Image (cartoon, rainbow, N blue to C red; front, side):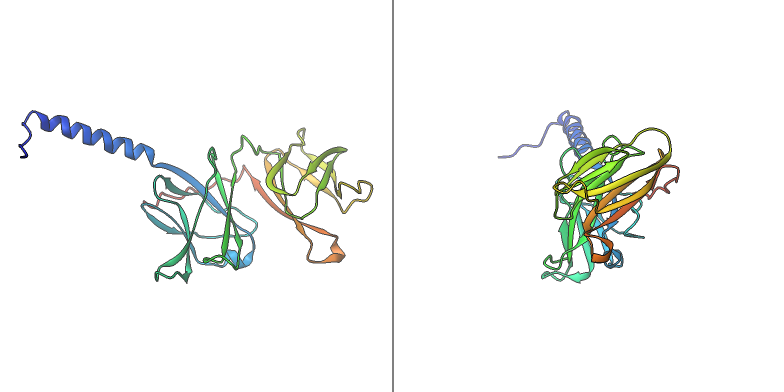
Length: 239
């Protein structure tokens, strides 16, 4: 048999409910995610980013520039990329989950083409926080398939075949720097050489990939620059 609660118990129950609601809202942490399309094909796709509260279309994707941040709620429900131009078996837009590694402070979502995926996309998250990728720094991801060496002003660093970034921070004043790339087992034969401009207000994300034109050498560089002097226009939380 159920008895009605005494009147004096109602405030206690309401307080408990309010506390639980507060704890739930705090657990749903808002995280700003920026997006980088791998190529023009991906940038032309109609995509949305979704969390447990809703979705918003990703605007102005570009293979050489991060988008503005989109604020999503990290909680019990997964964050996904919805392909609005592809339909899943349930009749809804095909979706791929965004896996954000634990401890990531400022996610940068790299979207690559993947013909085998339902969305036609492969997702990869980097931590873009300045604590690990400072202004003035060079950050390498060696996707060339070969272990490489990078030399900047006679300072060498090894670039293993890995999507784990390798940071090189030249430091010092703004200047022009001589740089080279070579296979680690052939250090005397550069496969790339150039003069790069070092600016302490700019950081550069560099993807090293196999070259599509053998005349240009065995590797190609995809370079994404960001200048902290350019002010971002904040994107409001869609929720």
